[in-house]
Length: 161
Image: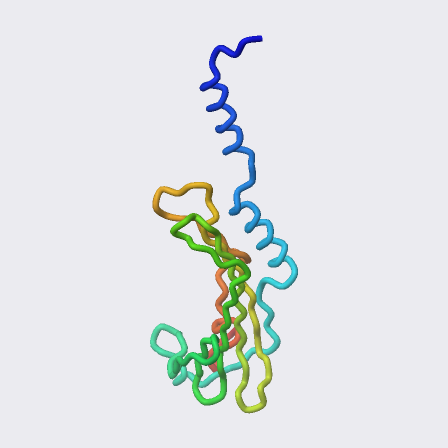
């Protein structure tokens, strides 16, 4: 049998390969979903009522001081609480070369007087790994809902939670 259109067949084969062969993005998304299933999400162990003067006019916490220590971001909240956030690369890649990145971020709020853990959250994020992109790489995260530890842990005295 003689092939009449070898270029067309090669093009069809390439299209099928692009459609069905898993990309690095697919592998990273699968890995991220498995990791997120194990430990992703928010866990609240204790809630705290703070005096109204600890909040600004929009309801957000004020008197926050930011610092960085040993690859951890620290946010002091008043004199008694601290948010500690650490991000670790599970897979580090060059997004300019369409390589994928997978990151795990662990956040926790602690009482500084006795180091009690009030809440913690784990989130995974993936960027890149696309077969091709038109200038902007794709991103995904897990869990997909926003993680807002402050509003889950802290509330104004006298306000219903």
